[in-house]
Length: 198
Image (cartoon, rainbow, N blue to C red):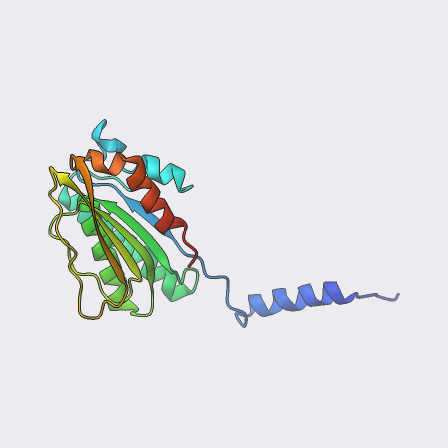
């Protein structure tokens, strides 16, 4: 009995064998994370960034009720990204958008990844009216810090000396800490950052 092997079948078989042996790196994925603020698990406040998540093609935004819940969310997201980085399934660059306390969560996640793997990048971080922002480090390429003119509780960006990216402070003529995240022009600005090619 004669077996006939064409070149395409042989190439596919070789690629599959090398991938199974770990000699070809798996395609690295990147992740976009959208994080609501405090009380975001409670309707109607819980609207938060859920509209933005849908527009970005994501299933939902991370929601929680208390600062403890936000701290747990930051820990779990950072642990997942670090584990994915270690096993080679996710090498970034990542994107993160956070509203209010969610902006603090974004900064904590990027800092945790910076400490574990300084080369692991965040190509974009969008912060909406986040109070007492932790520092951003050298693994962030571009950050937008969005605040309303009235009713803001947000702080200016806190940039570590290692930060070498682009930092934009954006003040929108608007009243309201919660509702500024629902503005169409704010969502459009965030979507540009989220959809920007790596």
